[in-house]
Length: 340
Ligand code: X2X
Image (cartoon, rainbow, N blue to C red):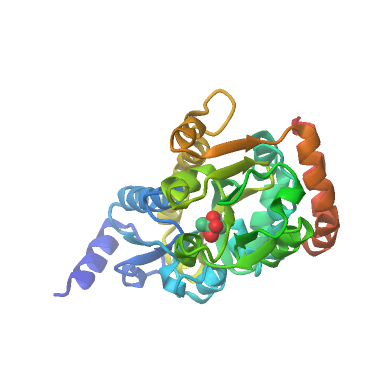
């Protein structure tokens, strides 16, 4: 008897399969996509979600991690379509990477909308966050929880950036999501679209001068060691992650197993948010201190300096607010104001 057949009979005998469903509908292995690997909080969350799902379903749901957006050849902005099509079974994906397909997710990329973690929490834990997950669901993908890649800070190899004039002419790698091109062009930089997979070589070879990524990513990728000596904390935008499952796969699971995978996602997401924020904020600046020890110069913008960047990117904000939906943007602004 084949092991799959044996497992099917066993599962039926144990009553662990929903009525009308065969355990044979379960795949021996499910493919989970992330952009970053286990050296980063994001990839670690992938491992953890797989481990907890396996535990909570007593081995019925077996997940293998494919970091580097490998299932789409590293082209991270195609990840969402691939989940929809079933090339990817599960993913922990960035709001940026999925925004070309789910236009409302550009909300998080509106320049200087979300000043701090309080504001971000007000969005992802409130009605705005729910509405965005509903949009993901409407596109045929089942969202389960928000995690976090983090606040994206600006680094480069040339000079400390305090004003837009300092940024002028610098080639900055951005993700292939058009709002980033618009924003960096408005700031006087030269944005260069590139996948994460190509970034490290591009920094070493001087194809680009800089990039923007959360501090935990900057540190784990050792970008300081690749010449990224200047880091500006500007609170430009935060990048949430969404835990999600392909709809057909989700519907093939029993109620109990869906609940288990959802709980695993929620638990992992909560841990992931803590890991992504560790050492970066008021009261715990351990990661910033570590980067300084590595020779990275950290520039902090005061509110006045920040306002200059914010005002320059205002037309980009306005343009993209139409894409996101004015009403949703208004509700997001109100939620952030109320959280202050
Ligand atoms: O490509 C990036 O910069 C990364 C890893 O942060 C995302 O996938 C959005």
